Image 1 (cartoon, rainbow, N blue to C red):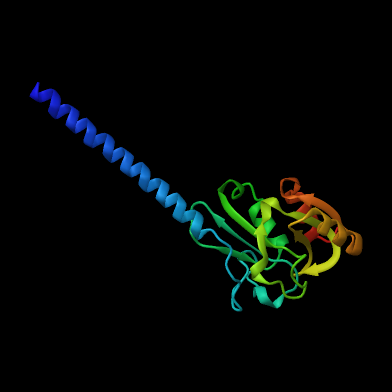
Image 2 (cartoon, rainbow, N blue to C red):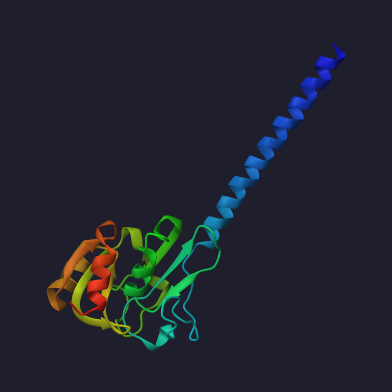
Amino acid sequence: MRKHIIRLGLIGIWLGGILAVGGCDQTHSASSAVLAKAVAIESADECHLCGMIIHHHPGPKGELYESDSPEVRKFCSTRDLLAYALDPERAHRLSAIYVHDMSKVPWGQPDDDYFIDARQAYFVAGASQRGAMGPTLASFASQPMAEAFAKQYGGELYRFEQLTLELINQLGSGH
């Protein structure tokens, strides 16, 4: 009888340990989510893709986090951000991705207080407005604002899930 009680006690300790470790994993996930917030782009920050100083260029910019790293990756344009993010080698690792809501900020100097989740954004590709090194995608939190921008500056409206590397590459080549 005593052996059974000891075994049950050991099983209880083992199960408690598993639950405690599971709780740690949940806490770790919650902390990771807190870390994956948009942050300000500093004056000396360089684009993760091309290395250019981000603040030297107009138009919407972006940031992302990958699930295997706590480091924020910053980009000088939505075109560079999406070229990086949509690459099949990386797309499955994205944990958070942010772009400027261009309905709230001036084109020449977007304000980092207005980052939005890129997966929920509306994008206008092919507009006459230029970003770093030329064509880029204007990003908006609302469809009516994206449509108004497209009416004024041209371009086609897309949701995040409709964007492809082919489209991004066409923008880069000026087609």
